[in-house]
Image 1 (cartoon, rainbow over the protein chains, first blue to last red):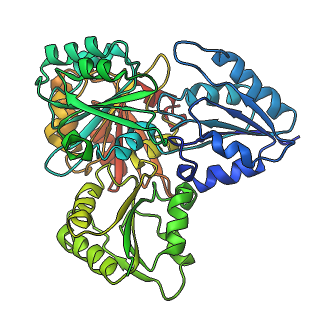
Image 2 (image 1 turned 180 degrees about the vertical axis):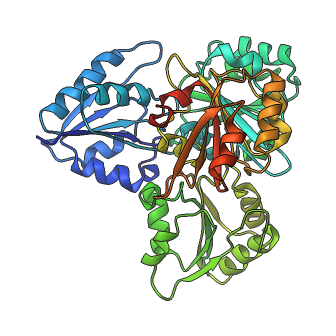
Length: 236
Length: 236
């Protein structure tokens, strides 16, 4: 059997932001292994005999461990099936695509990686925030963990995108200010980005955590820090 | 006339990496204004009566200034035409999409931004380098200018992607080492990424410029610095 695995970046959630290569693979799939933040609307188009396995990870809770996901991919491909691993965003941006690639390769399974639209960048865009903009920002940093906060560029002229829970937002902002970020640096938190219920809340680095709490901000959300936030219509 | 402008991220060059939304807009376009690094293969599919305007920028040479590109977009939309601005990568990642958006808005032209697959991330992926990888890298920084080199995270556990000419590569690497980067940090330069003639050259931060010169590396190229480079098959 000629089974194989395609690790497909599904983009930020809008079905129209899947790549045409990803869409074609999805149309050919025998098995689709899907994440919580992948574009679920596309699953409705699949034929009834396509096996859909939802390994969606809830915040702070991993229903299916990564090694079991890897095992599912390898198992189905060994049965000669075309397996599409449909992920949110890009497989290589906090998507653990590298681990799945290695698991397939180690098992001798052919594997293709299809890049996707990075959620961090697309969600900022959907809020009217360009991560780079001439005369405002020349570069950007994306982090998911608190470990890196101390060493990111501490200037509003470099955009910082953070993909982490809103619970520790206050501590994170404090650490950025302690590191050298100006307290008045524009900041935004974008909940449910690229979905019909997207909400954008803007503040400054010093006030963001308080404002986010006041409006009841919750995950999934991304936080953008930098002068580019002023380009958003939400900035007013 | 109900003209409008769509700023479409064309992805890294492979036609299959355009989004389905981008592809649909392209099929509806009356006018396509295209960059040098956009997926030119897709232009062959356009009807003969579609106006194609190539505003491709050569390295170190801007044939059509940005304000003239803006004026073309506004002018054609005012004629009631559907104008697709087809860009390489993502409109908001060094794509000057924000400037074009503002120009259209100021002129009262409806404008849509369609995110694309970011070239910086997809080119690294095409070289087998995930910009993040569990246990190796928790975040990444993308810069285009030399101004930011001094303040990027100086650790191999944070991936650095640089989109700039190869001429100043030696100076850039020296500055990174002076900033605190370990000279033995793995490094790669990827020329013509995501194209059939892609070439990946690996070295260390200390030796990259010398090795790049030895193989005759030239633009367009991206440079990746960080421990994730060891995950590439090119690392050996």
